[in-house]
Image (cartoon, rainbow, N blue to C red):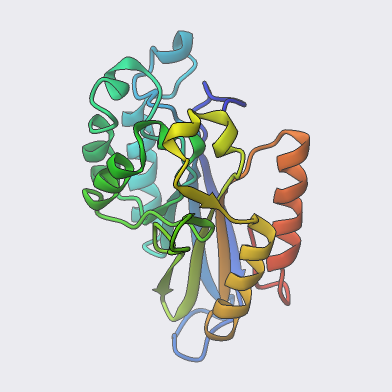
Length: 238
């Protein structure tokens, strides 16, 4: 997204205490899950990027490594605008980010609107070189209706079953060259979120929507509605 595109966002230590599942032997407090989330990095990988306001990828990777050492039950997620930004990435059509993402140890990501700037064939090529899935439950080929990416990924952390699904802003069709999305359909995020909840809720303790929907008024309304859709018995969070 263009909003806050120069910010390297890192949210570490969002800790969720879940009821103890029957499959796992845990402490009386329950299972401790740590979520690490980044978005809109826009290839600001050096500390001097953005006039020295970037934390730099080395610091990011070290923080993620530390979190995993403190708690093996950690999920690391990215919400997109990751392959496109500074010239060192755009000149390689995003390739420079592959090794950084793989070595950092992400578990899943959702593409952002700017990640479609290289065209869908290139984005698919990049996704296949990753050690983790790219998730999007609402991006499909216009002619066939087939989803381009896997809609969700399920994890099991110490007996806690977690499903992560991705949603991409339909504004992608207006925010990049129309020729790059002419063969794509961006399905309504709220409706797709409901479909994901209906499908995944019966077999999972926790649902996580990793979304690239933005914070401008229109997108913020969608994000809030998606959040309301997936709330469930205080065990389902965005």
